Image (cartoon, rainbow, N blue to C red; front, top):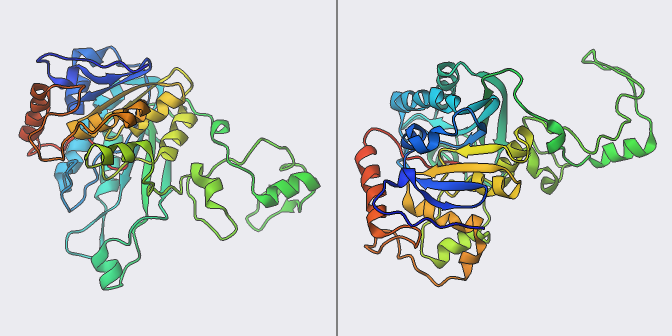
Length: 371
């Protein structure tokens, strides 16, 4: 059941924008939320931090993004704070996209350097790297890909799964994918070519005859003509082009600009299933449209989300409360002087907007950049 908070003149970081029985969304900077007394009760209790911070893009985005060494220092500084909130066997899964050198057809190593700095600052183990292929990505960078035709399109992001221990909670049996047709035939037939392979692996006569209910997903997927994309969406070849989901419908109804870099639900579902159990706490400090919270709710996990942009945070409520789709338009187009939605009065919105405005010069907003 959705619970709406009517705060008085209290900074929005410390009061939920909206809540359910399992979680709450806050509006404010993640640094402020994680340092607040209200959130201190969750230190050492978060099983998974799943997030997509702003990418280090050369083009400025509304959701906030830094570049160069400022970006690296900012992300590195968050590592010890995030780590402090994890359980002993908890995980951090961070999605970061690629970056290109300004004015040059060469890729920047900044995303990888920033992830390494983050890992080292909190003394984390890199449990595994995942590549998330998006077949629907536009052919960018346009100058090098579609104009000069000297590069191919950039179509993936990487997710680093990290933990304070080399054996965090995880179970790949919760993310099995459908067997291929050839594997189903093999199980039915009961025979296959066993013996030594050119790789020097020795395959036993019955090693692959047990039906485990599905295939163990890989950390990297390269689609082939034999594979059906719809059967592999949980193996991370995920596009994000849907326009008829409740969130986007609601944004159109309310004349709200949707978050431009939403995390696809299959990515959130993959990591939440893989790394948590029902009842565990999942946190997203760059929540954007709150994909993480909505998926956690559906999978019966507790959740905490924080987002710096009031419009993005407010519109995300429809993911948890679809009945809002039936409400008449109440939100004016972005840039108007009208107050925000019913969950916050005009003065609260001004607090969030003013805080964001004064801090953008030194740190990016807490928004999802792939969520």
